[in-house]
Length: 184
Image (cartoon, rainbow, N blue to C red; front, side):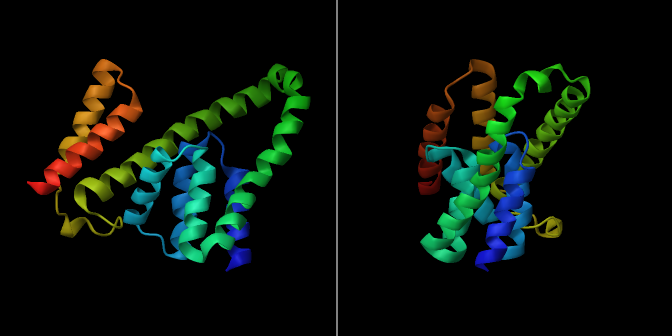
């Protein structure tokens, strides 16, 4: 399992264009092989928002810890980091050449578009898990709507969109509201 996890997160590191949020979709897909559920993925996403550091690193560490303890956490963290350690220096050396190449610019522009789609997919998975209790895409027949979570989701979205509120403040506010709603 150690080698499988290493290779999985090495692949995620190599294919993870678009930053941490875009990588989350790939992390979820690949981690399902090891047994990750939508609820565990939602927990991972919450921790990514609470713990300082890059999303990919935090996610890799979380999955490694969950399935193999501290050693596996170290292995997955290193594996997801290796591609950046290799490609960033190369990119920096040839940055000007890359920026002047129309073909590469077109490729990067379309990768950016794909990243937006992946980020949307992650948001959709989290919405299904937290608001509707859906653990897999096959569970539509047993939908149980969590109105409290749905209210918090749309409330946070509205406040952030309308007032451009600090995301950390919104996360804390959502946690407090969730605690209060749990009591009632």
